[in-house]
Length: 403
Image (cartoon, rainbow, N blue to C red; front, side, top):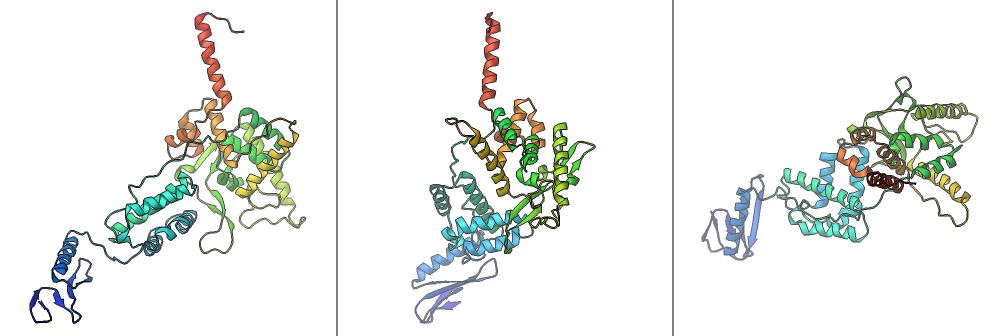
């Protein structure tokens, strides 16, 4: 039993200090001593009642002083390092530093609320960030705080019910059949000609295409084994950017793709180009194949792996050739990225009646919804053909002869 300065009993866990403040003490459910202070005894008793109620109802947290920054470090160490892929870990770290740390990193978890998170995400939108980037930040925060709840540093997740406004729907660039033909014609003789052609015949992702090795080709069965992806990045702790072979994007990304006769012909042509390149070793000063990447199907002229920048620059070179040859007054051939080749492949498949489930397997999507949501692009020429079909049907039914 504690006493005040005059010796009066104040009750269990309460005493008065020499400076006149009353002090209330109790041990919480984590085994930690809690000390509460007030110059008013009635106020202290209320504080004690509320604190002990929260403790009994498990509404208190393990450490009230831990900040978002403190917990982020623990979250990375306990739940992400050596668990997620290096590229995913790098994405978490870069997003946290760029968008979260400065805005809310200093706030204690116990003081964090939904308004803090909503303000952060709204600020990103106002700064011009796209929906996908904002969503990635929200995903990080939700997972961080869910793990904090499990570790009893928080009692509720302030990131769960925030609102994110989606971007306006943007049409994905897809080459029309005429554009595809024009591009491939202009790429004839280009060092990356076969890279472009195989992309349009398989729908592989850029990293999958550039990670292909010759042992991925089953010449007898006419199959291409997709088992890995190539990345070019600097991971946490590394001092320089470098090429790495990673597992595929998802488990569904591991797949076998049937090769057409044309695809096999292209690969044989690429095989000849690669054999010529490797025969130049020791004859050309800049030819420096990277150790561990010698067996790649597609390489640069110096036998290096192909980065996303190199792939994109190769496309730009072909487009410049097309535009230089166009007559004055003709519209320019519109720029596109390597991923457009994947979109174009999928669109051609839809145009030619391929079943969505089959296309899902070829593209390596985790769900049919993803395939239908991303690749149901219909070009203007396809729309015109469908409209013409309707016109033909109406003409026949009405007895009108079409000229």
